[in-house]
Length: 117
Image (cartoon, rainbow, N blue to C red):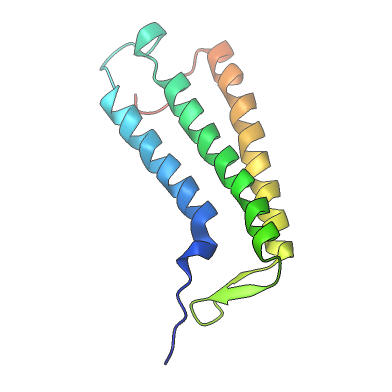
């Protein structure tokens, strides 16, 4: 059984994964028990990291389209990358970025904390 593993097709997913791991590590390392407002609020850092990951992955997808543009697959056809999939990946990543932009002021206006209590 020949499984064709083309990990380069999954680079946008790996970028989002790396950003999520960086957010978790940054939130854990900057965690101060008690009040998480002012300088103790890691929300700006985690918001920046997550938005950077979404934007970087969304910008990587058109580069993949320009390089090949045709339908390719990996893992014996279980992961297929075609222009339709690339379009919806960009839609989801832009939606996630807009959700992050909307969520931060909403949380701050209501005085809700982000991350661990």
